[in-house]
Image 1 (tube, rainbow, N blue to C red):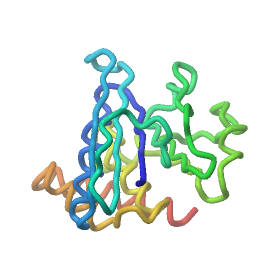
Image 2 (tube, rainbow, N blue to C red):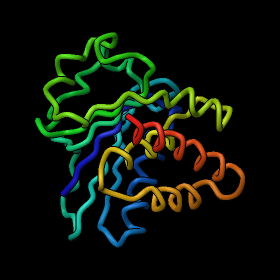
Image 3 (tube, rainbow, N blue to C red):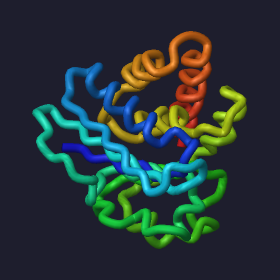
Amino acid sequence: MFQVRIHGRGGQGVVSAAEMLSVAAFEEGKHAQAVPSFGSERMGAPVVAYVRIDDKEIELREPVLEPDFLIVQDPTLFSAIDVFAGLRDDGYLLVNTTKSMEELGVAETAQKLPPGRVAAVPATELAMRHLKRPTPNTVLLGAFTAMSDVVRIDSVFRAIERKFPGKVGDMNIAAAQAAYDAAIAD
């Protein structure tokens, strides 16, 4: 089973990202589960969502305590909560930032992960360019697919189209593609 934990703040699309990632897995015939976890339901409050993906039925219902993949939509959370709690030694780290891991103060943790499993993507900037809104969720899903082989980018595109039909979906797909291309280039 592959487990993903997504950290962000209210209004960044954390829950929608988890939902779309699980739909992308379903598109490929996999079993998936998306579980939101809210602290305070207000804009800007820390939000966590969990995704599990497997080839067989998933019976767990609790939070993801040992993620294989950690997506951080808001790097200010590094100083607010223990985002890295339980991250597997062979895990992945994807951060929405233009800064280096050193600048974020998380280089020591990031360096413990295997080569090629840490990426910084300017997801908010890409979202502003393609969506005219600072919502990094679909952008980071594009980078997720470039970093791992859990789901394919075309499955993510179909999940985005389901969530956001029409022009909004097209803009989100363009943003996800831009992040995918940027992550592949690294």
